[in-house]
Image (cartoon, rainbow, N blue to C red):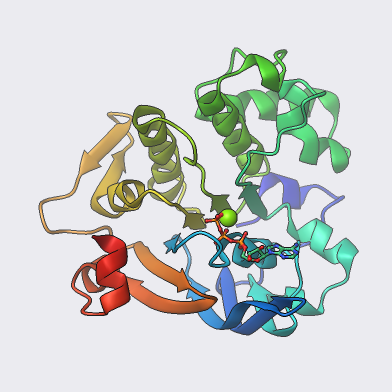
Length: 279
Ligand SMILES: Nc1ncnc2c1ncn2[C@@H]1O[C@H](COP(=O)(O)OP(=O)(O)OP(=O)(O)O)[C@@H](O)[C@H]1O
Ligand SMILES: [Mg+2]
């Protein structure tokens, strides 16, 4: 279904009917002699959350930046909703980003802009009228329970609040695909759990497809073993031993995808690296 921004005359990117949100085919990228990703192939299906794990420096952020065209691979092909972004011009990729929300590892808010302008930035770039920007920013901030902060500046908010603003900014255009780079990095356990609840709400209430990087295994398993109850507005545990069917794992190690599969298969893997990593 086209999102509000896609219906706007300024946006020309349209997801192709029935095509997968993300397809990577034999993607490789190196920086000088450093081969960061080697022959990476995977898919994200509609409504699916792919949890991306792996040691620091393994290429997780690079993979996410390839998925929204911020980086281009040396070889291989990447399709987003059926469009080959590896064959796109920069201006087409700009249009694509209204369908792909990104939460950057560092949050990456503009310090000199207030929260309203930070969250509404993409709409303003697409020349959406001011009053519509206001109402959409308010709606996005309500989702992250920060609707009283419009006029504040990032420096006046806590780390956890800034991360919630980054999520509001990523969902402002109601994207069909969300890319979260370590949304709980550097946060305390309670704030992290609140952030994970927001990503779960996107998955279970809005059925947004996503790739989520995390360093915290407990966050990954929270997403895999709970669902978001819309009426209670909270997370609820699945029966013991059950895992969410729309959530699965990918593990990157030294530039290769060493695991791509279900929660059950990850937990029961005999692979020595995975056993060590998960212990
Ligand atoms: N723009 C770039 N130019 C050169 N090297 C880069 C660039 N971006 C990333 N790299 C290198 O690619 C490798 C993987 O980096 P990446 O940021 O993807 O790791 P990561 O898995 O996200 O790590 P972390 O868990 O610490 O966030 C690192 O060796 C990094 O130095
Ligand atoms: Mg990273």
